[in-house]
Length: 335
Image: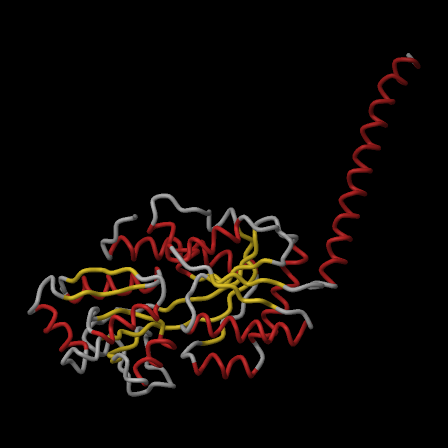
């Protein structure tokens, strides 16, 4: 009996020791991760962006990077990787080391729309990323070639309808593509889509008359209009922008219910330690709430949109469904 009892007790004791050791190692790992997060970053951080130079998103992330450098003493290096509506950049971050030193400046395009625009995406917007925080929201603007004899949306629609199949419209992001295609369908325009890697390339063709219209981020589009490279006809937000009070909304221009607002956010590769993700969220939100950042965003027609990992995770989940519905309604087939 005693021997049998001892025989049973021995493996039980071994199991308990294994459990305790495992728990101890786990606690040590958590403590080590927390300690690393306290000193994070201890070297330069690279922010990969899927947008071309010159647009509002690019300007925004560079200003944010400078604010983060000021608060941490470490460089935050902005690196652009364009192509496939942001998929090239997103896929590269998905494969990066999950240590917080390579992060992604994404948007509703890369993390909600692209999954509906490509039959085979190079990354999984959910499984391959750790959400950090939202950064800002920004409306879009309908811009046209200065060669077109139009002064408003109604005149553009009338002219395009009189020349079916003769107009070209461009896009350089998923947001721009969906917004432009939705406008074309709602307005009853027969036009040809032309994809671009960057908004700058599209504006060059708008200015020369090879392209007739497109929907671009408000910061970039309105700036180009002020430089007389294009004409801005309407903004896609629900209300007029304070910085451009004379620019009507699309609803005011005869398209009730037409509204597109993009959001920008920061992501890390999946399996990045939670403590590091939390530290990054803390640093980024402090920068977003800085009065200087708010003032800078206003000049880009954008608004601060602070958040946290969980709120961003929920936003991606909700908007993946919402953008899927908008893409379906726009009649866009996945490539």
